[in-house]
Length: 426
Image (cartoon, rainbow, N blue to C red):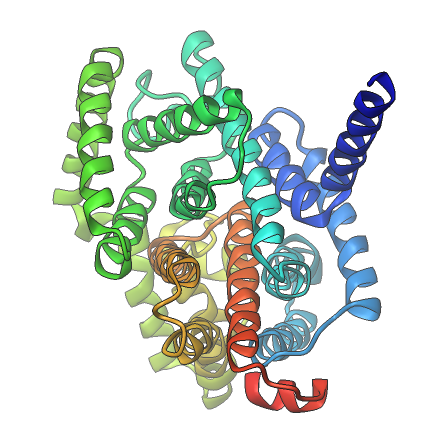
C-alpha cells in the first residue's frame, strides 16, 4: 500500500516537473512576471527578452513546423528586420522594439508545434490561470498599499509595478477559460473553487481599471461566444450568476469604478484631442507628403519618437497604435502584411471548422480563437500591446489552429504523407 502511494506520488511529481519545464508554462509565466515588475526592476525586461530569444532560436532551428500562417509571420518579420537596419537609430528600432515583435509573433509557431490536442491546451490554460493569479496579486497589493501609477485618474486605481496595458492580458485569459471549464477534468477541490474565483477577481479588476481596449475586447469575445457556443442556455445562466456576484461584491469597488468611468467618459467626449486619435491622421499626412518609397516601405520603423513625435507633439513621443505605427514605419506593404496575419488566422480556423461544427470541443476552441483574434485586433487598432499580452494571444491562436487541423485529419481519417498534409494546411 505504501509502495503504491509512493509510486502515485512519484508519477504526480514527474507530471508536475514536466508541466513546469514545458514552454507552454514557462513562456507565458516569465512574460507576465516581467510585465508586472517592469516598473520595479527595469532590467527584468532585458532578462526576459534574452531567455525568450534563446528559446526561439533553438525552436526555429530544431522544431519549427511550417504552415501558411507561420511562414507569413516569418516573412513579415524578415521584412521588418531589413527596415530596422536602415533606421537612423538601429538600437532603438532593432533592439528595443523589433525584438519585441519578433518574440511575440513567433509564438504562433510555438503554439502550433507544442499544442496538438486537448491535453496540451489544458496545460497551457493552467499556465494562463497562474498568469491571471500573478496579475491579480499585483493589482490587489497595489490597491492595498497604493503602489505604482494611477493611470487615468489620480489616486483612484493603482497598477502596481505593471504598465497600463496589463488588464489586456486578463481580457485575453478570460476569453480562453471556457475551454478549461468545458473539459471537465477531475480537478482537485481547491482548483474547482480557485479558478472561478480568479476569473471573477480578474473580471472585477478589468472593469475597475477602465481600460477601454480590454473591456471592449472582452465584450467582443463574449459576443462571439453568444453567437457560436453550442450551449447558449448555459451562457445565459452563467451570465446571470456572474452579474449577481458582481452586484453583491460591488460595495468593495463601486466608488473606484464610478470615478474611473467618469474620468474616461470625459476623455471620450474630447476624443478629437486625444493623441492616439490625432496620430493616425498625422501619419496619413506624412504618407501623402512623402516619397513613393515611404508610401510603400515607410520610414524610421519603430523610431517615430525621434522624428514624428517632436514634429507633431513637441516631444519624443512614439506612435502608440500598431496600425499607425506599421503604416508610418513599414508603409502600405508592411501594414498589409500585418493585417494579412489576422485574415489568415481567421480563414484557416474557419476553413476546417466548417467540417467540425458538430464537435462541441472544436466549437468551443474555435469560438475562443475568434474571440482572442477579435480582442487582439481591437487592442492593436486602439493602441499597442505588451510582449506578455501578445505572447498569450499568439501562443493560443497557434495552438487552436493546430488542434482544429488535427481534428480535421482524424475526422477524415486521411492517410497522407506529411508533405500532402502541408499542402492542405498551406
